[in-house]
Image 1 (spheres, rainbow, N blue to C red):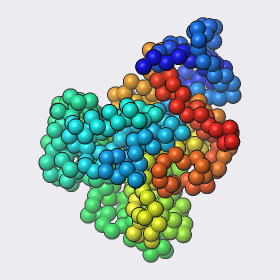
Image 2: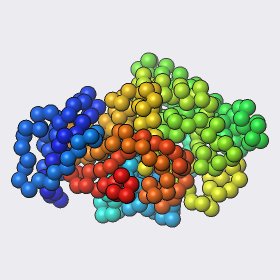
Image 3: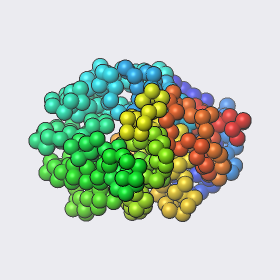
Image 4: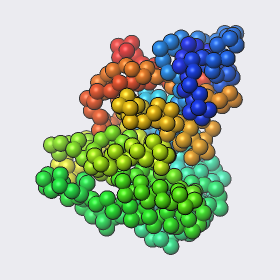
Length: 435
């Protein structure tokens, strides 16, 4: 669909894909970037162009979120493809990778095509569905990897689940490698996790809650990394949470294993103490860890051991969240809060802005082999305009998701998306009342 030309002028432009940080303009024609940077200031306006004066704002590639749970099909009361697009746009996110944990599970071409088609018709942002590694997420029979890749699926995962059979993992990795797809895996050993609901340690003992040791994450990760080295697959650890896992990932990378790792914004900015008086919005999987682990994750993001940041957006309704902590479902929404929470790391001086935005844009785009995450000429005009210094309290009015189970309820933030553009079309503007 053709769109009117668009000119964004007087913006500070940061494009991590080109290490670009300068004041300039962005010219958009037919939904793609025609020019971007200081030189574009003197290029003139295309006839009939809409003009946005972005003075005082940061223009950056739209965020790419590689871990988003939806409800459609089957659990539309949690989140629809339409509502997840509204939530993403409000957070400056222009592309999302959805998980296959729906009902039915996304393990066949028809179901993947349903998500793609519904997204084109109803969603404000770009949606790329992942598919299950095994049929029905049962961990027994491999999905039709080849047929699914031919249909446009390039990432395979068990979503919240972890495969336990190393022989099956090896076989699936071989198929995924042969089709040049991405093997994405959550690493949580079911036996070691047991009935645990928070990080194992002194705080769990004080609260009287069963704990989950860090080894529950690290042991399956180390197994996966050895199998990835054996098969040569492109392996991605979906979300790491502790220093032990970072050490294992760093060692594997040093040895040349084709491995990458993600971290959720929750594990970069929160720790186990945030649970407080049994606050179930902080019941997450993997659990929030010690402050030492959180700091290890930040350091690993800076040095590149961790490649991308994800929201791990996981809507859960009140019926399964408003329960005693040990009985509550794990998960928190995160699309709307991903960017402002990440900017905490910039404002505190913990992570340079270019590195932070790289892990939110071009990093996941390259990992998923998407044509986005950049403002390079010729690429889709997926853009976020951000006020880096705007303070606000994250409240119910900022949430577009159907569910409200945020780990950042009433959090004080500095910096937010004020306009989101997908394919050259404005899909979100911050309301004047919120400005």
